[in-house]
Image (cartoon, rainbow, N blue to C red; front, side, top):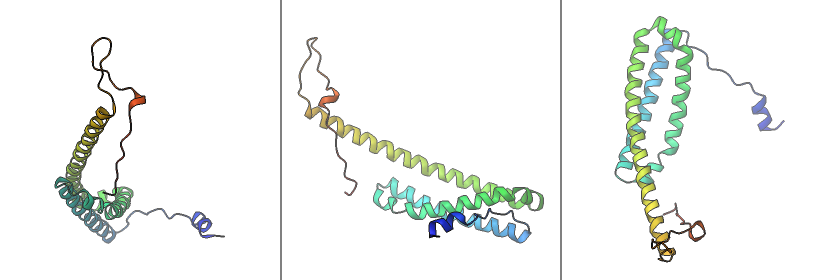
Length: 164
C-alpha cells in the first residue's frame, strides 16, 4: 500500500465539541490569537497595497493562507461547540462575537483596498491596450464619413510580464 492509499484509507477525525470550561477558554484564546495574527497580516497587506508595494504584498500570500486555514478550523470548532458555550459561558461567546465583528470590519477595509487596486490596475491595462490597438489599426474613414473601428481580425493582444 503506497502513501496515497494509506492517506485515503485513514479515517478523517471530525473535530469534537468542547466539553469543559478549560477547553472553552482555550478555544476562545486560540481563536482570538488566530484572528489577531490574521488581522496583523491583513493590515500589513493593506498598507503595502495602499502604498503601491504590490510585490511585498504578494509575499504575504503564504502566511495569510496558513493563518486563514487555522482560522477556518477554529471557526468550525466554535460552531460545533456553540451550544455548550451558550449554556456554560455566554459572556465568553459574546466577547468572541464582538471581537469577530471588529475582525470582519477590518477585513472589509482590506477587501475594499484590494478591489480598488484591482480596478485601477485593470483600467491601466485596458488603457494601454486601447493605445496599442490604435497604433496597430490604420486611421481611415468609412463611406459614411465616420472613423473606421478595428475588427477582431485587426486586434493584436498585448503581453504582460509578471516577472517585472
